[in-house]
Length: 127
Image 1: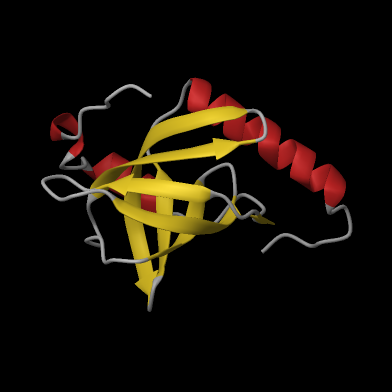
Image 2: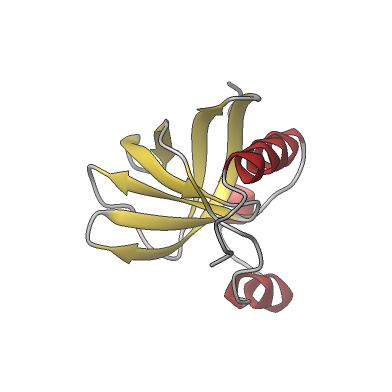
């Protein structure tokens, strides 16, 4: 996978912060895959995802990552490899919530995966 630059994404403008603070708009789906989290100026943190939506992902991590920071995520989904930047939105014990902050090919892979998972879980209500 390539190497995304975190330096240009260290601060958010007001409009971007408002988007991050918005209520959850996308249905979450359970998915368990390995994830690598690359915080700025820290070694990689390994973990396992818990669930995913078109706007974010949660994961159980073995080490702490700073809430409020933009990190690079790498994980594999059924429709391809994903590498993208995400905002560390929350933490509850070892579970971290990440909100995606960019679009592109990675978002297309995530969207296709969520659409497939929706077909597999048709009776589940949105969160």
